[in-house]
Length: 501
Image (cartoon, rainbow, N blue to C red; front, side, top):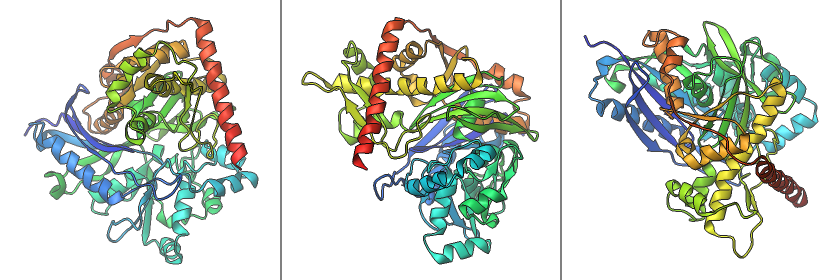
């Protein structure tokens, strides 16, 4: 029998479903990808068809294995990384979703969350979960679903329905309904999970009116979650690694020591700073979250969430037709010798950390008659670095020290101009790894850890390799001038929003 030295990693993201086959050295062997349809039923609402997610995920897994020439018998396990907070509600008997999934970007529950904050609920919620009350997280989305029809809440209380984030839903379908489980990182993003006790919390369930009967079992990130049906992939592959996409990327970037930080640039941007074995509370509106849990022992992180990063580039391409390809952004940014005083605040679905303003909307400031396409494209790229600096300053204030380097990954990290501007704006070296698909890599590492493909964290650290290091080179006066302009633009977005109320 062939040695099982490969791991099939699923990266089910906001805009696509991807599968990558990795070898024992953490190198990608083959991959497949399907773009995911976005559904916008109303202003601020974002949905996905969970059944489409399942079909696409199964398809890309089959394609990745078939194109590898490795053979299914050489695959040791499956690892799953997923878009977090996106909320799925399905029938236990059939596995079919009862409605579209509500995506993490969705803001339909902003008013409910505002009332809970006004009622003084946030301190208790933050103490237990490490999170703030915001529509971003799963709990208010799930409550909204259960309130759509009386029979849904009744069926939920009877245990006929199941709730999960996308990882849990995929696991349920892979195991033909035998396993309803999630991992500690995804559970920690629901507003229903106490990150200190590492269990679902009755006070939180009462606050959001969620019946315990619909919740999944919570397991370590490297654990035997279940076994995929033979008929699906041609072998009974164990599913032994699961993590939310940002925690998976943190693992894929080998950020195992306190003070290490990674930032992933996909649809949004998410920075996670390892803070060790104690869940410290942020004083600057950062989130505290479970970074990973192994052998029952959690490691925690501060997290800063930016809702729009790559999504701004997608908007330039698909929304207003300013570019025909994301790959053109770097050359256009170079065409503009400076930003010409133009700032784009990409608050299309509100502002995330450290502002947490769900009602903010995007704006472009500083337009003049000689503003060109290149200036607007450059402003969109610069906004990613400005938002990252907002996060980094808040994290450094919480942690008491700035990190020594920032590890980056995700689609935008392949853009040299973005990486250099990040280094300049942060005044910090930016490290880009050989494998920038670190979300999938982290899922593979977790699954492989359980199966012995990767023998321990030291082996994972050795598998991480640097492709390029970007050193800061901007004049400090220019850096501060540019950032001051950004902060003024963010304040003006807030004033515009106040004026519309």
